[in-house]
Length: 263
Image: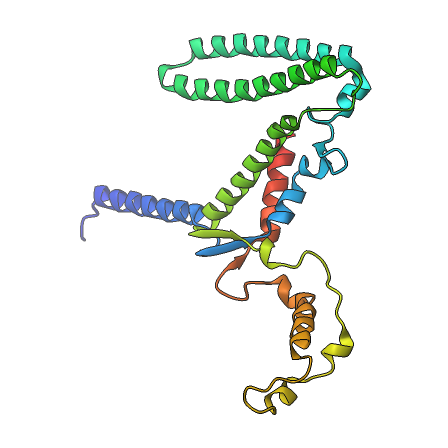
């Protein structure tokens, strides 16, 4: 009866486990499908962001943010002053909290914690600068309580830009793509009026029957109306028919999930 080498069997079994675990881990990390080129519609991504949806074209400011002129109009100079004082107290309290956390952290974690602290403080410092600017503005222009400086919209724009960038990076990593491009410039802004009487005046077949170099009457008008007609058709909803993956709705989903998680 042959001897059973338990040591070899155990080694083989452990080796198979390691290989199996490695394969499973690689499968989890791999994208659901690879695509070299992806396309999104930046208009949809921007409109999916909660801050962007609060943009007021009449004032060219974002509602319920530091740039909102109604902030001064509704709470007045004293209200803005209270917001400034509260934010200064918040910055001071958080700075002390971070100092304590960093001083008690392990050496290998210090750099990471410092980076987080400075990123958070920069955001609060910007908010404080804007509120101080509004307080100064309302003092200098008391007759214009609904006014806010143009630069007050910059933090909101930066937040939206970072969210869009995060969305693009996540999509690119998810599909291991080489390129993500925007199809918004390729799509019509709105439905275009079409003169059907001109459009129905010719057929492609009748045009080809003409002698070489001879164009039908009003041919260029017909070409223009044909262009307008096709610009309105659903075929242009997919501007890249092949060679790229349509991630328009997926990009909207990613930015919505990210922003909902923050709130």
